Image (cartoon, rainbow, N blue to C red):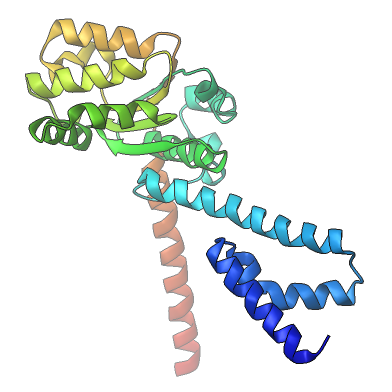
Length: 272
């Protein structure tokens, strides 16, 4: 086959790969052909290599897209946690939660404790791991969720919003308890979390004990029903303990000071 024919064939392959949405083949076809010739691959082996690379890239892109769409405020991984510095109850339950079996079983997880103890970090880490394993995840603060529900009702698209909300494998509702709600907000939140109960998983992070939930829902009936629905067959994680975030901040400040002292010593040596 003439060189010109080979070039035309490669050009056609690239065009076909664009139409068929096969970006890995389009980008690396020349390199793959060279490797196939060098390693004396059979036609079957060559085709296997092309498809495997395309498949692997799609799997990886799918993970990244799910993480992006989930809306995490920051990328925090379970692997980054200093488990020994977490509250005792979190240490005891983290390995179980990390399996993500609670998502398979449609169970909820509630992290309750003061600010800075690692609630949102653990919740985000679980959410990112879920994205990596193919689950559809939404991360949203409770105040923002209520605002979106109200806006959807005002625009007469509440049911379509609710249908999307129900379909997430995992919803992480962060910061329950920092802001109280009016009656409409309480009812909307209760309705939409109830629709997921027993079928889809929800993670709640809150700074309030259950005894104080009536401070934000302002309705004892809704409060009791909300607690009953969320806690049924759920994992309750007591996050009371020293501030995990404060420890991280102190360590960071220590490193900055050490780096500053080192630079000062270097400057002194240069001056002398």
